[in-house]
Amino acid sequence: MTQRRQQTTRKTQNNRPGGFVRIISGQWRGRKLPVHDVEGLRPTTDRVKETLFNWLAQDIYQSKCLDLFTGSGGLSFEALSRGAESVTMLELDKKAAAQLEINLNTVKATNATVINSDSLRFLSQTGTPHDIVFIDPPFRKDLIQDVITALENNGWLTPHAMIYIEAEKELGQLAIPSHWHLHREKSAGQVCYRLFAREEP
Image 1 (tube, rainbow, N blue to C red):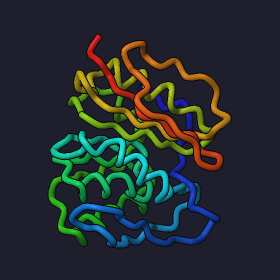
Image 2: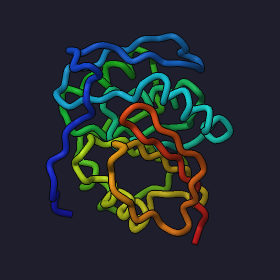
Image 3: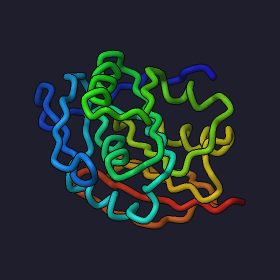
Image 4: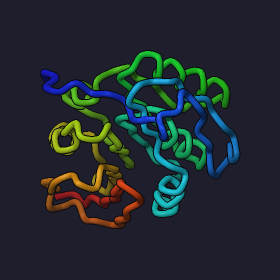
């Protein structure tokens, strides 16, 4: 699949250089992990992250997770801390990906894989089904619709997968598959975040 748009990683809050992400709960509760200073990095806030993982409380344990725009790793490390079976972490920026590897070694996590790749290119191959997918791309890059299509067309989702989408509030209407049911939805500041539950068509 030809990359049609240049991706950037998520934006650092308040444009601060570097910083840390905090793990809210689970075996690494309270741990802070360093974040590499990358232009465009935008970690999910603790408030949003806590809400999301409350929504996923019954689903996260022993789940296979796919984090398509990993950035700081906040969602991936939270999932691992709360007992996910495995997490595949996609990150385009080489330095950010290297920091994720360092952080995995720091917490001695052996059930996660960092892949330094463009997410759409990665999704263009035949996939391995995942139980939970995190879609939190850089804002205003028009990536989400192509990601949804690739997830469905190439076998990346289990029959009852949960799909999390975090996007800018002003994002236009997405063509959500009819067998994805909106499970939860909230807004915080300029962010709108939704969790969909998939039912095999």
